[in-house]
Image (cartoon, rainbow, N blue to C red; front, side):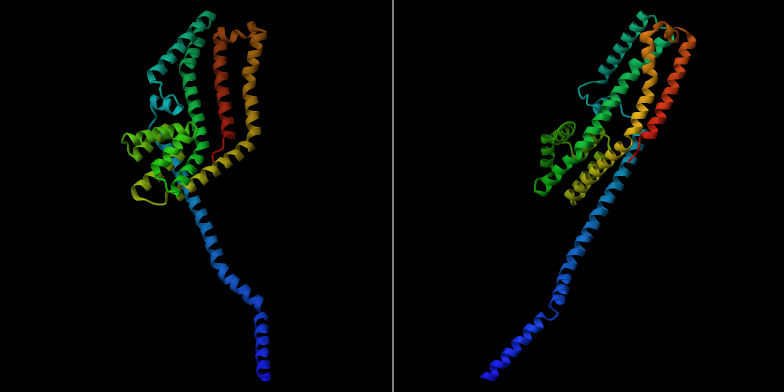
Length: 322
């Protein structure tokens, strides 16, 4: 019995020694063998996600180029331009009436102040046709910026809604109800169109016509393909939202880097008209020759051309595409 107990004790001690001898190395190898597939799968998933985002960014640039070429070929009508600027209740007839009233008011002011015929014609042309169109373009560009700023958040709402099990139409209704304008207004028109029987493809096409941006074009492409052939809609829209936020961050960096050049361009461009206004307020007889004499009118026209050329060159120098 004593010999048996001693033999069992020696076997136990040998097992303990065998277990602890090289145990760390074996455990490390086992941990690595178990963790390596997870690490490899995680790295592969990250690479796949980065590649998908890169593909989304490339496709977004292609869509933007195609839209730019399409806009150059087909110019939007006046009704479409009014809708893009947010004037959905204004007809082209009202717009042209407003332009005519501005032209008559400008003509009356020039006639009362005794301006020359050339100055009167230029002023009427600029106020009646140039100013309203510039205001329309400015409001349209500002509306596009506001839409793009809030569009990524709207896409995130759609992604979360789809992942939680809601249908696509219900996700669009949530965005139309919760998002601020102009995103909410565009999605309201889309949802209202779907209620009266318009297909999703037609509604998205109408949305892209009202808001002709690359982001809306890609969103319409993704939604149309998913409606026809199926696919992982939430993943595609999540990649789109990530790309939109990256574009926004890049735009902020560009704005910060070019702020000094923009300030210099603004000061240089505003000096001639400011000095001209000061001279006209202090000594109007000295500067009236530019408006009453033909030579002065020619000089004003030449100055306007050169100022416009200089402002255009400075704008090209500080306007970076991203």
